[in-house]
Image (cartoon, rainbow, N blue to C red; front, side):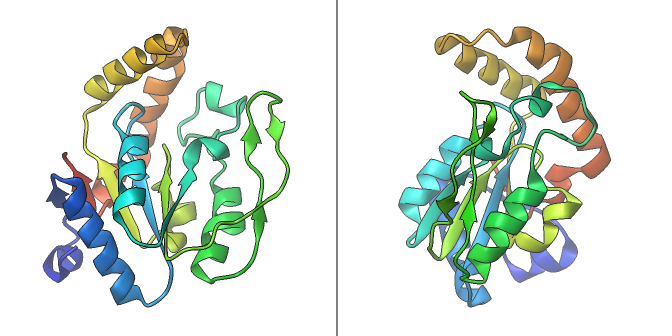
Length: 203
């Protein structure tokens, strides 16, 4: 992000993966240490797609799947702060050790067993890409060097998410209507994640 945008608190609109990748590279060079680039947005907004593209485009990048930090029970319940997102574990087990170049292990949620899986080493690299709903929250602020918001409105993102689920045989229409969309609205109202982002990705 350019210095003027950072100083004014305004988000910078970027429309290509290449432009975002260049900004991630710039942020890493200026930081002088491994960085974490958080990618958030409403469900269905393209967070995972962007993270995968950036992983290929940014030298030294590794990806941490946000779905590995979704509690399979709590993420299906109503909350105003996306309570099902295990931000504390993500931050202390993964993000901070990565930035500090400390060896550490973490556990993914095993959705088949609905429990934490076996400990795995935190990947090493220069840039960690994390794509996750409810990521731009006060509890993670200290670990995010760059916040990228997939700038798709809630109605469009929800329609995409429903279509994606239908294509792979997931019948989640009730969850979207009664839990996930209300959670998105409440979280957005409480924490303004779009306004917290340095980058709005409109690609």
